[in-house]
Length: 370
Ligand code: SAH
Image (cartoon, rainbow, N blue to C red; front, side, top):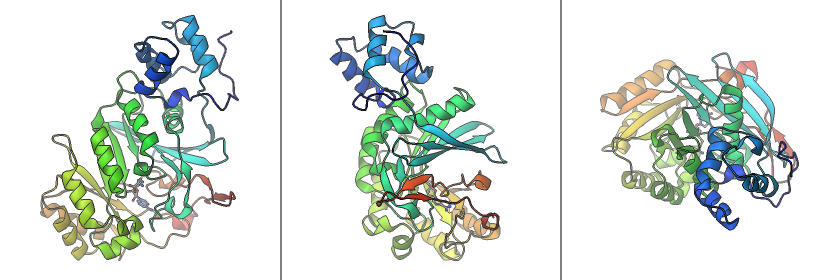
C-alpha cells in the first residue's frame, strides 16, 4: 500500500484517529496486536507534530503506518470562513459533513494565545442574552470535531501559538462530557498538546451532574456562568437555573474538588438595568462569601435581535468596586473581536434546526456594534 496523503472521503465506519485519547488509542493498538507503548509515538505525530500523512511517522513500523492509513480516518471539517478582527482576534467557521458549521476563536494577548472552542452545534440552554442560545441545539460535537478546531488554528498560526484553551465557544460542554473529556485528556497529555491544567478552562451554565463528573475526572479550571445572584432573575437569564437553582449551584461549587491555589471563575454578563445595580453587586458578594472566587464581569455583546443593552462603563466600574471592596478578586473582560462577531456570546455558526432548515445568523449590523 502506498503511504499517500489521506483520502478525502474515508469510510464512515472507521474510527476517527483525531478523537482518540491515550486510552482509546491504546485499546485500538492492542486490538491490532501492537504494543500499547506505541500510543505515545502516534499521539506525538498526530497531535504534537500535527502531521497529516503517515509517511512522516519515521519511528513507526510500515505495518502500523499502513494500518493507520487503511483503518482509521482523520479527515477534518473544511474552513469556510477565516476572519481577522482589528484587535487581532481571529475566527474560523468550519463546515461539518452534515451541513452544520461551528465557530472557533483565537484571542491573542501579550503573554498568551487563547483558543475558544465549541463543544456543540448550537446549544439547548437558551440563555436569553446569548446568540448561540437563540439557535437551539442541533447536536453534540464528536471529540475529533472538537480537536479539529485546534488543528485548524495551529495550522494557521503555528504549532506554539495556542497556550490556553477555553470551552467557551458554542454549546454547553457539560452536556457533552462523553466527547469533551477525551479532548481534555488530549489537551493535557504531554505527548499530544501538553497544556498544564491551569491553562484549560471549562465554562458551564451550571449543569450539576456534569460538574461532579468534571471535578472527579479532570483537574482543569472551572468557570461558572452566573449572571445573576437571585433565582427569579437567573431563571429568566439562564433557564437551566430552574432545574439547578442558585443554592444547589453554590453548594456544588463549595464541594468542587479544586486543586490547591485555584479559584473558580464566576462570569457575570453586564446587562444595562437588568442585573447591574448596587444591590445586585451586594447580593453577588453574599453569594460568593467564603469561596475562592474570581469574578469576571463581561460587558454584554449585542447580536441581531438581542433584547439587552450593555451596561455603561461607569456602571461596570461601580459594580466592580463594590465586589472588590468585599475582598473578592474582580476583573472586567475586554470585549475582543466584536467587529467580526467573535466576542463572548456572539458565536452562531450555521445551525440546522429541527426541521433541517439552515438557520444562518446575519453578521451584526454596524449600529449594533458598541
Ligand atoms: N455554555 C457554557 C459555555 C459558553 S461560554 C456557559 O454557559 O458557560 C460563553 C460565555 O459567554 C458564558 O459565560 C456566557 O454566559 C457568556 N455570554 C453569552 N452570551 C453573551 C453575550 N451576548 N455577551 C457577553 N457574554 C455572553
